[in-house]
Length: 97
Image 1 (cartoon, helix red, strand yellow):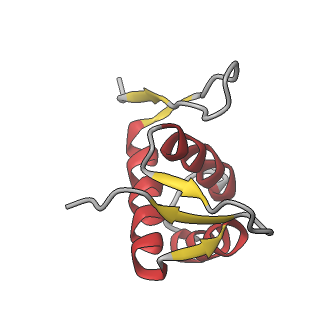
Image 2: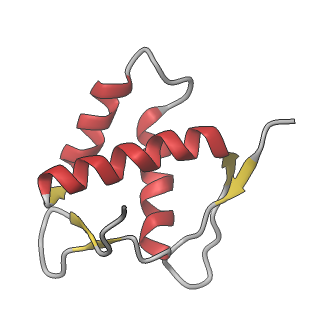
């Protein structure tokens, strides 16, 4: 049986979803790598970059996974939305090794 992870949601009262840990790890690494390189980026641009990078190498609807994992990383305090920026901008909160 494949390992799964229950994601978190940053909004109180909302729950995450149960997804493949392998897919979670691929998307998580893609998000963290992209934000580390960009410093700060629009969510739309981040999604497009990851969709382009993983196209043909990922089984599933990539943009849905990006949204799901992004919400989980927000809930865990790894990334954050930049306050008062429209469209939604994201950045890393903590530096990972």
